[in-house]
Length: 265
Ligand SMILES: Nc1ncnc2c1ncn2[C@@H]1O[C@H](COP(=O)(O)OP(=O)(O)O)[C@@H](O)[C@H]1O
Ligand SMILES: [Mg+2]
Image (cartoon, rainbow, N blue to C red; front, top):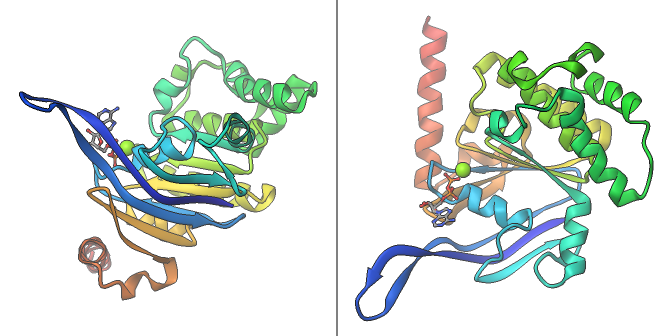
C-alpha cells in the first residue's frame, strides 16, 4: 500500500525579500491519500496545481517539508531502507516520452534499462533477448521493433516502449505522470486498454496523474482533485457525479457539455 500523510512542500522562491532573504512558495498543502494494492488512484488537477511535485514526493525524488510518504508501511524518507524499498517496488512513466527515451538508444536498449534495474535488484540474470521480445509482445509490439530508434516510432509506439521499460523492472506500483496526455484521443484509448490489461495481468497498483477527467473515469478506482496544492475532493470514481466541490463540478460540467455536443452531431 502506498500512502501520503499530511504532505507539505515548498520551494525557495526567486523573489528576494530585503529583510528576510528568500521567501518560500508553498506548492502542496497537507496532501493525504492511500492507494490499496491492485487499485488505481487518479490525480486530477490543472497545470501548476502540484501534481508532478506530488509525483516526485511519491517516487523518492523530493523530500517534503513535513508529512509522511510510505510504501507498505515503510517511510520513504525515513531511512535508506525506505528509499530502497521504494526503488524496488515503484516504476515511473513520464509524459515526455520523447525525452525520457535516449534518442541514440534502440528499443532493445531502452527496455534493457528496465531489465538492468531488475537484474541488479533481484541479483538475477534474465535472458535479455527473450525478455525483450516478451515485453514487446506484452505492450502490443512485435519483435522487429527491438532494432528501431525512438524517431522511427509513432508517439503511441514509443510510449508503449516506455511502458515496457517500466514493466521490465517488475514493479508493484507504476506512477504515470501525464503519460498519455500528449497522444491523440484514439491512441490514448488504446494505451489505456493496455494499462488496464497489464494491471490485471501483473496485479499492479497505479497512480495516474492527468489533467483529463475522461481518462480517470476509464481507468481509476478513486480520484483525487488537486486545486492549487490542496486536495479539494477525494472519492471513489463511481461517486464522482455527486461531488459538491466547485472545481470538480466545473470539470464534470464541461464534460457533460462535450458529450451532448457529440451526440448532437
Ligand atoms: N523545483 C522547483 N523549484 C521551484 N518551483 C517549483 C519547482 N517545481 C515545481 N515548482 C512550482 O510548483 C508549482 C507546481 O508545479 P507542478 O507540480 O509541476 O504542477 P503540475 O504538474 O500540476 O503542472 C508550480 O507553480 C511550479 O512553478
Ligand atoms: Mg506536471
